[in-house]
Image 1: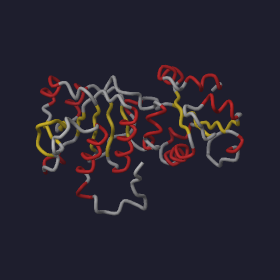
Image 2: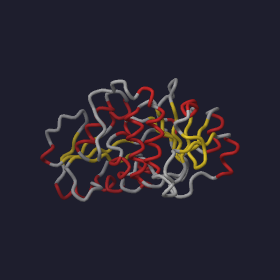
Image 3: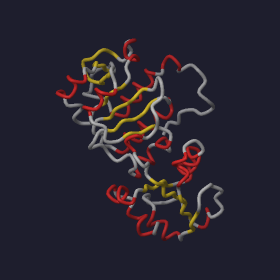
Length: 258
Protein backbone atom coordinates (compact mmCIF):
# COMPACT_ATOMS: atom_id res chain seq x y z
CA UNK A 1 0.00 0.00 0.00
CA UNK A 2 1.30 3.47 -0.87
CA UNK A 3 2.20 5.80 1.99
CA UNK A 4 -0.31 8.37 0.75
CA UNK A 5 -3.05 5.73 1.08
CA UNK A 6 -1.99 4.80 4.61
CA UNK A 7 -2.51 8.42 5.68
CA UNK A 8 -6.11 8.15 4.56
CA UNK A 9 -6.81 5.27 6.94
CA UNK A 10 -7.48 7.79 9.71
CA UNK A 11 -10.92 8.22 8.10
CA UNK A 12 -13.65 5.58 8.08
CA UNK A 13 -14.59 6.02 4.41
CA UNK A 14 -11.03 5.25 3.34
CA UNK A 15 -10.70 2.33 5.77
CA UNK A 16 -13.74 0.85 4.09
CA UNK A 17 -12.62 1.73 0.57
CA UNK A 18 -9.07 0.43 1.03
CA UNK A 19 -10.03 -2.44 3.33
CA UNK A 20 -7.37 -1.79 5.98
CA UNK A 21 -6.95 -0.12 9.37
CA UNK A 22 -4.06 1.12 11.50
CA UNK A 23 -2.53 -0.49 14.59
CA UNK A 24 -0.04 1.82 16.25
CA UNK A 25 2.58 1.41 18.97
CA UNK A 26 4.61 -1.41 20.53
CA UNK A 27 1.92 -2.77 22.82
CA UNK A 28 -0.76 -3.00 20.14
CA UNK A 29 1.61 -4.57 17.63
CA UNK A 30 2.60 -7.18 20.23
CA UNK A 31 -1.08 -7.93 20.91
CA UNK A 32 -1.64 -8.26 17.16
CA UNK A 33 1.24 -10.75 16.98
CA UNK A 34 -0.28 -12.72 19.85
CA UNK A 35 -3.66 -12.84 18.13
CA UNK A 36 -2.05 -13.90 14.84
CA UNK A 37 -0.88 -17.14 16.44
CA UNK A 38 -4.50 -18.26 16.76
CA UNK A 39 -6.27 -16.40 13.95
CA UNK A 40 -4.86 -16.50 10.41
CA UNK A 41 -6.57 -13.26 9.47
CA UNK A 42 -4.25 -11.22 11.69
CA UNK A 43 -1.22 -12.78 9.97
CA UNK A 44 -1.75 -10.56 6.92
CA UNK A 45 -0.39 -7.33 8.42
CA UNK A 46 2.49 -5.20 7.17
CA UNK A 47 4.76 -3.15 9.45
CA UNK A 48 6.00 0.39 8.90
CA UNK A 49 8.84 1.34 11.23
CA UNK A 50 11.41 4.04 11.82
CA UNK A 51 15.09 3.16 12.04
CA UNK A 52 14.98 2.37 15.76
CA UNK A 53 12.54 -0.48 15.05
CA UNK A 54 14.14 -1.84 11.89
CA UNK A 55 15.24 -5.00 13.74
CA UNK A 56 11.79 -5.68 15.21
CA UNK A 57 11.49 -9.49 15.21
CA UNK A 58 7.84 -9.68 14.16
CA UNK A 59 6.47 -12.15 11.60
CA UNK A 60 5.42 -9.57 9.00
CA UNK A 61 7.26 -7.75 6.19
CA UNK A 62 8.61 -4.34 7.24
CA UNK A 63 9.19 -1.06 5.48
CA UNK A 64 11.49 1.49 7.09
CA UNK A 65 10.25 5.09 6.89
CA UNK A 66 11.66 8.39 8.12
CA UNK A 67 10.57 10.07 11.35
CA UNK A 68 8.81 12.69 9.26
CA UNK A 69 6.93 10.07 7.26
CA UNK A 70 5.93 8.22 10.44
CA UNK A 71 4.54 11.45 11.89
CA UNK A 72 2.33 11.75 8.81
CA UNK A 73 1.22 8.11 8.87
CA UNK A 74 0.47 7.86 12.59
CA UNK A 75 -2.73 9.02 14.26
CA UNK A 76 -1.03 9.98 17.55
CA UNK A 77 0.76 13.29 18.15
CA UNK A 78 3.96 11.58 19.33
CA UNK A 79 4.21 8.27 17.45
CA UNK A 80 6.43 5.53 18.85
CA UNK A 81 7.85 4.70 15.44
CA UNK A 82 6.05 1.43 14.72
CA UNK A 83 2.65 0.76 13.20
CA UNK A 84 0.93 -2.04 11.34
CA UNK A 85 -1.46 -1.79 8.42
CA UNK A 86 -3.97 -4.61 8.84
CA UNK A 87 -6.70 -5.88 6.49
CA UNK A 88 -10.22 -5.45 7.79
CA UNK A 89 -12.01 -8.75 8.40
CA UNK A 90 -13.47 -9.92 5.09
CA UNK A 91 -16.94 -9.92 6.65
CA UNK A 92 -16.88 -8.13 9.99
CA UNK A 93 -20.58 -8.92 10.48
CA UNK A 94 -19.61 -12.58 10.95
CA UNK A 95 -16.26 -12.39 12.71
CA UNK A 96 -15.71 -15.40 14.93
CA UNK A 97 -17.74 -18.56 15.26
CA UNK A 98 -20.29 -18.61 18.06
CA UNK A 99 -19.42 -21.11 20.76
CA UNK A 100 -21.57 -23.01 23.23
CA UNK A 101 -22.31 -21.00 26.36
CA UNK A 102 -21.13 -17.76 24.79
CA UNK A 103 -22.85 -14.54 25.87
CA UNK A 104 -23.51 -11.61 23.55
CA UNK A 105 -23.26 -7.94 24.50
CA UNK A 106 -25.26 -5.75 22.12
CA UNK A 107 -24.45 -2.04 21.97
CA UNK A 108 -27.09 0.20 20.43
CA UNK A 109 -25.56 3.19 18.64
CA UNK A 110 -22.54 3.52 20.92
CA UNK A 111 -20.82 6.76 19.93
CA UNK A 112 -17.78 7.28 22.12
CA UNK A 113 -14.57 5.57 20.89
CA UNK A 114 -13.21 5.42 24.43
CA UNK A 115 -16.35 3.68 25.69
CA UNK A 116 -16.22 1.05 22.96
CA UNK A 117 -12.51 0.43 23.44
CA UNK A 118 -12.97 0.03 27.19
CA UNK A 119 -15.91 -2.34 26.68
CA UNK A 120 -13.87 -4.52 24.31
CA UNK A 121 -11.11 -4.63 26.90
CA UNK A 122 -13.59 -5.80 29.54
CA UNK A 123 -15.04 -8.50 27.27
CA UNK A 124 -11.55 -9.76 26.42
CA UNK A 125 -10.62 -9.92 30.11
CA UNK A 126 -13.59 -12.07 31.08
CA UNK A 127 -13.74 -14.06 27.84
CA UNK A 128 -16.67 -16.03 26.45
CA UNK A 129 -18.43 -12.92 25.17
CA UNK A 130 -19.01 -11.47 21.74
CA UNK A 131 -19.73 -7.84 20.93
CA UNK A 132 -22.57 -6.90 18.60
CA UNK A 133 -22.70 -3.33 17.27
CA UNK A 134 -25.83 -1.74 15.86
CA UNK A 135 -25.91 0.36 12.71
CA UNK A 136 -24.93 3.93 13.57
CA UNK A 137 -22.29 2.87 16.09
CA UNK A 138 -18.74 4.22 16.09
CA UNK A 139 -16.42 2.32 13.75
CA UNK A 140 -14.61 -0.29 15.88
CA UNK A 141 -11.52 0.12 13.66
CA UNK A 142 -11.28 3.83 14.43
CA UNK A 143 -7.69 4.37 15.71
CA UNK A 144 -9.06 5.77 18.99
CA UNK A 145 -11.13 2.63 19.58
CA UNK A 146 -8.19 0.36 18.74
CA UNK A 147 -5.93 2.24 21.18
CA UNK A 148 -8.56 2.34 23.96
CA UNK A 149 -9.07 -1.41 23.59
CA UNK A 150 -5.37 -1.99 24.36
CA UNK A 151 -5.40 -4.77 21.77
CA UNK A 152 -8.57 -6.43 23.03
CA UNK A 153 -10.15 -5.83 19.62
CA UNK A 154 -8.00 -8.68 18.28
CA UNK A 155 -9.31 -11.11 20.89
CA UNK A 156 -13.07 -10.44 20.95
CA UNK A 157 -15.55 -11.85 18.43
CA UNK A 158 -17.01 -8.71 16.90
CA UNK A 159 -20.01 -8.15 14.65
CA UNK A 160 -21.08 -4.86 13.09
CA UNK A 161 -24.33 -3.59 11.55
CA UNK A 162 -26.50 -5.92 13.66
CA UNK A 163 -30.02 -4.51 13.85
CA UNK A 164 -32.21 -4.64 16.94
CA UNK A 165 -34.82 -6.55 14.94
CA UNK A 166 -32.26 -9.27 14.15
CA UNK A 167 -31.77 -10.09 17.83
CA UNK A 168 -35.18 -11.74 18.19
CA UNK A 169 -34.29 -14.37 15.61
CA UNK A 170 -30.94 -15.16 17.20
CA UNK A 171 -31.58 -15.07 20.93
CA UNK A 172 -34.53 -16.40 22.88
CA UNK A 173 -33.52 -14.79 26.18
CA UNK A 174 -32.59 -11.12 25.99
CA UNK A 175 -31.82 -8.82 28.91
CA UNK A 176 -31.80 -5.03 28.77
CA UNK A 177 -30.02 -2.74 31.20
CA UNK A 178 -32.54 -0.08 32.14
CA UNK A 179 -33.77 1.91 35.13
CA UNK A 180 -36.54 0.24 37.09
CA UNK A 181 -35.74 -3.38 36.33
CA UNK A 182 -34.68 -6.22 38.59
CA UNK A 183 -31.22 -5.84 40.14
CA UNK A 184 -28.36 -7.45 38.20
CA UNK A 185 -27.60 -9.39 41.36
CA UNK A 186 -30.76 -11.41 40.75
CA UNK A 187 -30.02 -15.08 39.95
CA UNK A 188 -32.06 -14.76 36.76
CA UNK A 189 -29.63 -12.18 35.31
CA UNK A 190 -27.14 -14.87 34.32
CA UNK A 191 -29.78 -16.93 32.48
CA UNK A 192 -29.90 -14.77 29.33
CA UNK A 193 -28.07 -15.15 26.02
CA UNK A 194 -27.84 -11.51 24.96
CA UNK A 195 -27.40 -8.33 27.02
CA UNK A 196 -28.58 -5.10 25.46
CA UNK A 197 -27.11 -1.68 26.29
CA UNK A 198 -28.38 1.61 24.91
CA UNK A 199 -26.80 4.70 23.43
CA UNK A 200 -24.90 6.91 25.89
CA UNK A 201 -27.50 9.70 25.76
CA UNK A 202 -30.71 8.18 24.42
CA UNK A 203 -30.68 4.59 25.63
CA UNK A 204 -32.71 2.08 23.60
CA UNK A 205 -35.94 3.02 21.76
CA UNK A 206 -38.72 1.76 24.00
CA UNK A 207 -40.78 0.64 21.01
CA UNK A 208 -37.98 -1.74 20.01
CA UNK A 209 -37.90 -3.52 23.37
CA UNK A 210 -41.47 -4.86 23.25
CA UNK A 211 -41.05 -7.26 20.30
CA UNK A 212 -37.74 -8.44 21.76
CA UNK A 213 -39.49 -9.37 25.01
CA UNK A 214 -36.38 -8.17 26.81
CA UNK A 215 -36.23 -8.53 30.59
CA UNK A 216 -35.19 -5.29 32.26
CA UNK A 217 -32.40 -5.17 34.81
CA UNK A 218 -30.73 -2.33 36.63
CA UNK A 219 -27.53 -1.74 38.57
CA UNK A 220 -28.66 -0.55 42.02
CA UNK A 221 -27.22 2.75 43.18
CA UNK A 222 -27.93 5.74 45.41
CA UNK A 223 -29.74 7.53 42.54
CA UNK A 224 -27.78 10.74 43.17
CA UNK A 225 -27.24 11.02 39.41
CA UNK A 226 -29.36 9.96 36.45
CA UNK A 227 -27.24 7.20 34.96
CA UNK A 228 -23.92 5.35 34.81
CA UNK A 229 -21.30 5.72 32.12
CA UNK A 230 -21.95 3.08 29.44
CA UNK A 231 -18.57 1.40 29.78
CA UNK A 232 -18.96 1.29 33.57
CA UNK A 233 -22.38 -0.34 33.23
CA UNK A 234 -21.02 -3.02 30.89
CA UNK A 235 -18.06 -3.60 33.21
CA UNK A 236 -20.35 -4.22 36.20
CA UNK A 237 -22.71 -6.43 34.23
CA UNK A 238 -19.82 -8.50 32.83
CA UNK A 239 -18.41 -8.97 36.30
CA UNK A 240 -21.80 -10.04 37.62
CA UNK A 241 -22.12 -12.58 34.79
CA UNK A 242 -18.74 -14.02 35.73
CA UNK A 243 -19.04 -13.68 39.50
CA UNK A 244 -19.47 -17.43 39.99
CA UNK A 245 -16.04 -18.04 38.47
CA UNK A 246 -14.36 -14.88 39.66
CA UNK A 247 -12.49 -16.73 42.39
CA UNK A 248 -10.91 -19.18 39.95
CA UNK A 249 -7.32 -18.46 38.77
CA UNK A 250 -7.35 -16.51 35.51
CA UNK A 251 -3.65 -16.45 34.72
CA UNK A 252 -0.81 -14.31 35.90
CA UNK A 253 -2.18 -11.03 34.55
CA UNK A 254 -4.03 -8.52 36.66
CA UNK A 255 -6.42 -5.78 35.53
CA UNK A 256 -4.50 -2.51 35.19
CA UNK A 257 -6.03 0.72 36.45
CA UNK A 258 -5.45 2.92 33.42
